[in-house]
Structures are given as C-alpha cells and as structure tokens.
Image (cartoon, rainbow, N blue to C red):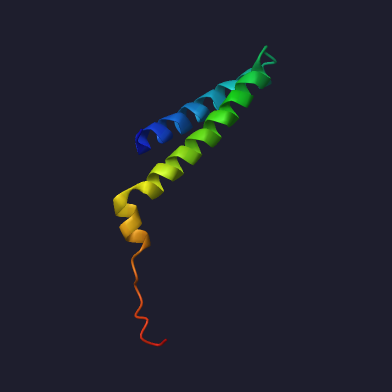
Length: 73
C-alpha cells in the first residue's frame, strides 16, 4: 500500500459523507448507515495516510533535520 491508498480512502469517506448528509436532509432510508460508514472510512484513511507519510524516508530525513546549533549545551 502507498500514501495514495490512504488518501483515496479518505476522499471516498468524504464523498460518502456528502451523500449521507444529503440522504439525511431528504429523510431517506439508510442515511445513518452511510454516515457511519463515512466516519469509519475517514478515520481509516487518515490513519493510513499519516502512517505511510511518516514512514516515507524523505519525511524521516526532514523530521530528523537539526536546524539549530547545539553548541550551547
């Protein structure tokens, strides 16, 4: 899996959330189920995106970047 996978799951979650909100406003059946599925997809997508982003080697190098001189210790 890649970063794109987590981002795609997150986007699908937002699309289903939009559809579920529309279903809720129009009082359609299964609106609550659509909103629940959207929340699960958004949380899963955000966790996967964060995990794969932080596991990327270039991000690791950026986070280990020491900008300031520690000579004052």
